[in-house]
Image (cartoon, rainbow, N blue to C red; front, side):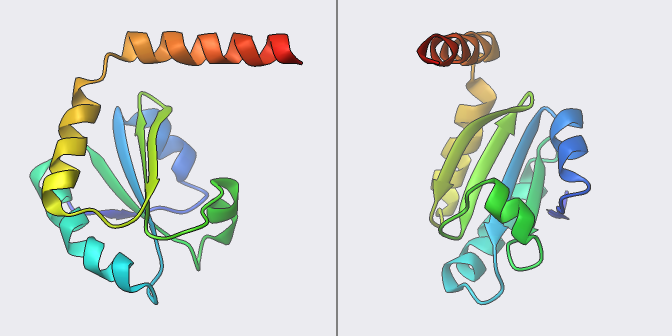
Length: 126
């Protein structure tokens, strides 16, 4: 599966309707972004069950601001609608493959429990 261009209008549905979503925040002028692009594209071809989306930070400034993107490329990963990974910097293919395996192996019941615990703790602090 080829990468998909993601914009503000489609992002909520993409995250809601797919189990695993990898988002590459990038810009055409960014050298590391251009270096990471073929690695990301090859991974999208090899893992058709995962959505690999590209967010052009120049065209989608609102999305970039909403996700507080400060450096590009930034990779964000959603699993079952939950943000489970966010990191700036280009990855090599072996690193991306390890990340894909790790995200697939996540115990989502444990992740949901941690999200709920964090939410309750933040409510107590208020």
